[in-house]
Amino acid sequence: MRKILVGLTLLCALSGIGAYGQTPPPKAGPGSPPPPTAAPAPKPATRDELYQTVARLDTEMFAAFNAHDVSKLMAYFADNVEFYHDKGGLSNFAQTQEGFARLFAQSPDITRTLVPGTLEVYPVKDYGAMHIATQRFCHVENGRNDCGNSKFVMVWQQQAGSWKITRVVSYDH
Image (tube, one colour):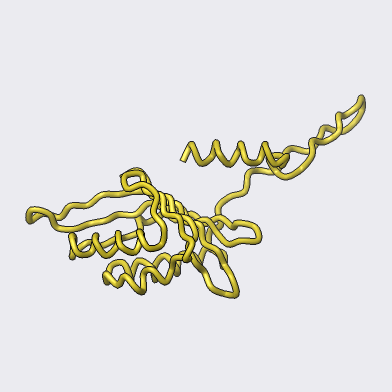
C-alpha cells in the first residue's frame, strides 16, 4: 500500500496537481487574517450510494466465486483487466479466467468472505471507484479448515450503467 501511495503522490507531483488540486494561497501581509487551514484529506465514502453500489458488487461477484461459477465471475471483469497478484504476477482476462478454473478444480470447497469493517470505497473522477478491503479465503486441507486473509484493491469502471473491474491488486498473501 505504501508503494501505491508513493506512486500516487509522485503522479500528482508530476501532473502539477497540489494536495487538494489548488495553488498555494498568497502570502499574508501585516494585519492580514491568518490564511485558512487546508481542508482535511478526503475520507472514504461510507454509506452513500457509491459505497452501497460497490458493496453490492462485491457481494454478487463473490457469490459467483463461492458458487465456483467461472462464467458469472468473469462477467464482472473488463476484457482488458490487469490482475496483479503478489505471488502469481500479472495476468490478463484469459489468464485470470484460467486461474479461477484451476483454483476451483484444485480446491473445490474454497470460499471467500469479506472481513467485516474493512471495506473502503473511493470515487475515481470520471471513471468509477476504488474498492479496498481485506478478504478471507478458506478451504479444507488435511481434514482441517485452512483460512488466510489477504488485501486487495479493485478499480471499477462505470460505463453506460454497467460496472466492470479493470485493475486488481491482490497482496499480503
